[in-house]
Every structure is written in C-alpha cells, then in structure tokens.
Amino acid sequence: MTRRTLLIGAGAGVLGVLLASCTPEPVPTPTPDRSPTPQPTGDAITPAAFARSSWTTDPFALGAASFTPAGTQASAREALAEPIEERLFFAGEATDTDAPGTLAGALRSGERAAADVLRVARDGERVAVVGAGLAGAAAAARLTAAGAVVTVFEARDRIGGRVHSVADEADWPFPAQMGGWLLGAPDDDLLETLDALDVRAVALSGAEWRSAEGDVSAASVDPVLSAIDAAQQLPADESIEEALTLAGLDPADPALAALLASLAASSGADASAASAWFPPAFPPEERTAPLGDLRPILDGLLDGVKVSLSSPVGRVAYDDEGVSLGIATGESLSFDRVVVTVPLGVLKSDGLQFAPALPFGHRGAIADLGMGAIETVWLRFDEPLRSTPAGQPEEGTGADAETDPSAAPAVWHVVGGDALIRTWFDLAPSTGENIVVGIVGGEAAAAFAELDDRQAREAAIAALAPFIDASPD
Ligand SMILES: Cc1cc2nc3c(=O)[nH]c(=O)nc-3n(C[C@H](O)[C@H](O)[C@H](O)COP(=O)(O)OP(=O)(O)OC[C@H]3O[C@@H](n4cnc5c(N)ncnc54)[C@H](O)[C@@H]3O)c2cc1C
Image 1 (cartoon, rainbow, N blue to C red):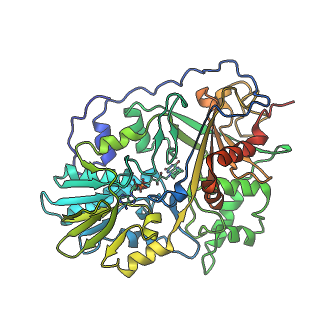
Image 2: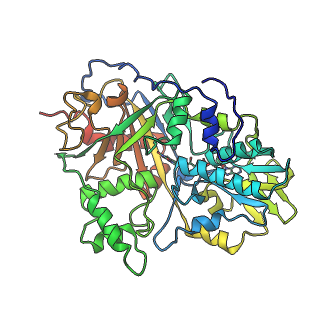
Image 3: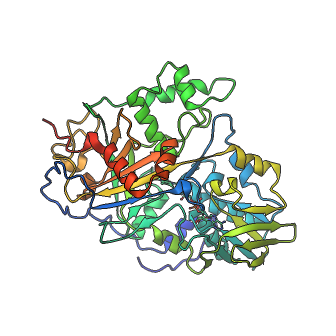
C-alpha cells in the first residue's frame, strides 16, 4: 500500500479516505494449492488446526449481531441513535437501519454519529469514543479529520471488537476469522478497501445439501420470502417461524430447518424470534471472503488517534455541559462529548452505567432490540475431507464442479440429524487449503459458546459427518 496523501474531503466516507490513501493493486491470484493432488482423508478426521469463537459469553460483546425481534419496530434503531443533550451519541451496528449486524452497518453508524457530533461541536473539542470496533474507529477517523481531539477507550487489549483475525502462521495459511469477515456485495466499499490494502479475497458461492443418507434437494428461499411477504400484510407482526406455519410450510422440515439455520448463522436470530415485518437479510448467493488480516482496516482508521487499550468504561455521567467517563482503572476523565459504540449486548447488561439513566426512548430501544448469537469454528486438515471437490451437484449449485474444482459448491448445508452446526464454508475449492469454516447462529450458537474447546471440536467434527469423504460412488 502506498501512503496516504489526502485529507478528508467533505462528504467522503472514512473508507474513501483509506482508499484514497492507497494505490489500487491488481486482484491477487489465489494461493497455490498446497495439496495439488487431493486424496480423501478416510478416517483421518483429526484437525491439524482448530479455532473457535465464544462471543455469546464474551463480556465485551455478549452476543454477535443485533436483530429485530417479532413485535419490535425497526425504528427502535433510530431511537437508539438519537443524540442525548448534544453530549451523548450512539453508534455501532445496532444503530444502523439499513444493514444492522454487519461490518458495513457498523462503519456507516460511526460515520453517522461523527457527523451528528460535528453538527454541534466547536473546533478543537475533546471527544471520547467508547469502543475500538469498526464503528468506533470510523467515528474517531472522521472526528479527528475534522479537528476534534479524540481519545478512544477500548476494554480489550486489542482493537477491532467483533472483527478479529487470528494470524498464526503455524496453524493457518491465512488468518482465521473469529468474527465478521464475509462481504455481501461484490461492489462493497469494504472490498475495495481490502483490495487497496492488499488483502486478497475469494468468492464463495454454490451450495450442497447433504444428510447422513446422502444428497438432499436444496430448500428454496422463495417460499420463505413469499411467507414473509404474506405475513407483512397481517395486522400484527409475527415471527418468521409463525409466518412459515401460516403459509403452510413446516419449519421443522429438515431441509427448511437447514435453510433457517443458515439465516440464523448470518443474522444471529432464530426464525422463532426474528420479526417477519423487519426480517434479517437472507445471505446472498455469492459472498466474498477476505483471506487476510482485517486489522489494517482498523489501523488505517485509527492512524493518529489516541487509543487507550484495556480501558473498560464502567460509567458515563453526562449533563448539558459535558461528559465524564469512569474507567475501570479508577480514573474519571472529562470530555466535551462522547460517542458510545459498545455492542447492544453490553448496553443490555449492567456493564455500562449511565448517570442520569438514559431517556425512556433509548432504554426502550435497548430492551426491545434483540442481541443475536453467532459463533464460528475454523478447522484445518492435513488431508482433503473429500475425494472430489463435491459429490454430484444439485442442478444450479456448482454445476461444473467435476471439471473445475474451483467451481465446487462452497457452502455446505447439513440436513437432519442433531448437528449443532449446519452451515459450513469449504475453502478448499477457492484456496487449495483444506479448511472448513462452520458458522452457527441463534440458540444453537449460544449452546456452542458454552462448550469447552474439546467439546466444541467434537461437535464440529460430528456435524461435518455427511460431508466427510462423501465422494460419489
Ligand atoms: C461470529 C460473527 C460473525 C459475523 N459475520 C459477519 C459477516 O460475515 N459479515 C458482516 O458484515 N458482519 C458479520 N458480523 C457482524 C460484524 O462483525 C459486526 O456487525 C461489527 O463488527 C460490529 O462493529 P461495532 O463497531 O458495531 O461493534 P464492536 O466491533 O463490537 O465494537 C465495540 C467495541 O466496544 C468495546 N467495548 C465493549 N464494552 C466496552 C466498555 N465497557 N468500555 C470500552 N469498550 C468496550 C468492545 O470490546 C469492542 O471493541 C459477524 C459477527 C460475529 C460475532
């Protein structure tokens, strides 16, 4: 990456600044296959490397992504984003109305909150930002560029929050992502930024559905969307699960349950909890997976900003004159304004106290919005899990798999049985590395988070059973 040369221009997004600072690089080519002649593992299913997340029990996250529960208005997010006394401002994915629970939503929320601050702040004011995730970093970048004196307080000993790349070359050929990493749209701003930062990315598309008995027909998303459409005409909001039942579908049908598990894995919300009026976005057919360390995105945004790590804020006292932050180390520090970006899960807990208590509108929003659970597990094997990149692909799902390994379905849906993790990404076709990534959402994720590492590894391997050495006869 060549060095930044531009200052923030009016209206330029913070990622635009990062982008402007980088010379675009050609899209890198995939890593050479370290296992050029794949052979099946047979019964060798002990992973060579294993990494897993536990966001649900992490005190500085207490969940993975906000969602709108049945019966809650999406406008609760706007209520949460409302500035208080022109001193207290809120950002974070939960405050974004367009794409809550995403990387893009987090970034946008930080920019929005910074713009709110700048509308009322005088030159050179001291502004605190609580949280050094994407929202906090985006807010800090914009405020610093506008001349505010910004200090970021981060509870953890690292920046990034729910973005966490584990870069351990002994275990992983590219960093294992414990939090947010998949991008939805090919033209995503973030993707351009990653390109500019030299982080290569691969496309993940095509799906394969298998049960213990073998290939299973894919569950189509269309009837689910129709059921949601129909429920949106009802006088009261229902859960997605109820909407499906009303439309004559059986949410317990194994293939449909696997589809709903993939929705929970991307949104954190079970169909029984998520609103049909304000449903989470269904995962797109193609996702982009960055294969590098995502931390440089945060580093770029926080360049030149004072960041105080290992500094959990326990109390925010505010009035119309200013703000005082109580840090867990015992210090109390005064600022003109504060941008609070802690996750909704933390706001729901008593981990962060406000004095005076937040207005009813904010407390109502915090209580009403849901904090969903998503956990992930990365497994690397010395040998390929499959003797071919895929079994006989379903029509329209990775059709050229047998002739072109990179066209093999990247998404595996585990249908039926009692697997805890039903949604998997096979990174072998796109990277040549024997790595699979399991993602689990909703109540199953909360259960996964409670497992110790040995149990989590066993649950992951057991869930993969339909896909292990599932070569065509
Ligand atoms: C497993 C998982 C998978 C995901 N997958 C995707 C995906 O594929 N694509 C996608 O777009 N999104 C995904 N997401 C969501 C995405 O990661 C988040 O929406 C985004 O990172 C949230 O950013 P944020 O800045 O709002 O919050 P955070 O990143 O959580 O930042 C908040 C910061 O506040 C800090 N903090 C908490 N309490 C305190 C305190 N008391 N004092 C000081 N600091 C505090 C936290 O440590 C944290 O650093 C995923 C999330 C998870 C967990």
